[in-house]
Image (cartoon, rainbow, N blue to C red; front, side, top):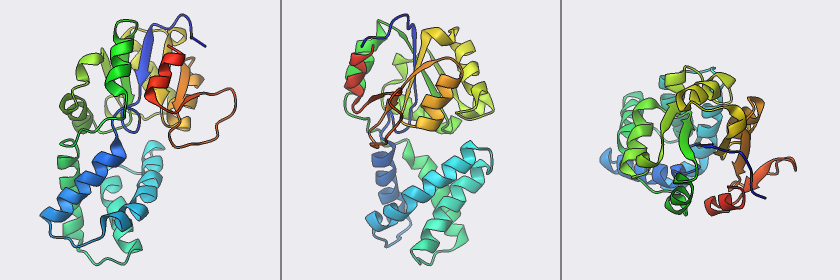
Length: 229
């Protein structure tokens, strides 16, 4: 069912348009090769990915800072798989990970098609918890920056989704009103519930196959947005 009276569409970036998992895996291939670290990437990622999600939740909840996030997610992973590595090397890996991550630019299938579909119908915006220095590079290198009128990240806003402050910051930047706005993202807590709490409509990009409550709008592919907008 088409949603009426929407003028502004806000997207999450990582895990919604920009294929974080694929780009991250390629980045680890790169930095492990650079530092001559002989490790099975798939084994590493199977342990790293849930640890990374846990640390991002701590970061989102303001319980750790950025340097701690970047170092500890790697340290904990290497410890968990009993891989001996020095702290100096972990710090270098954490720096190189950020440096090389934005050089890989895989997007989710349908990204360009849905942005082309929406661009003349709505004003498009980004709200992201990602790091300031990385997010714009991701958008520029993936050639999607031109679609968006505003980009709000958590470092600019001073808080992270689902804090209502970041949504209100994004509304002000976009000169938008909540009832004219919709948020699309992969996180039920950060994107969907956070947006609903401040008066947005919201759509869950549910490629993780979560089981949200029945009233939550959800899509399995980006092109399914056409069902609503």
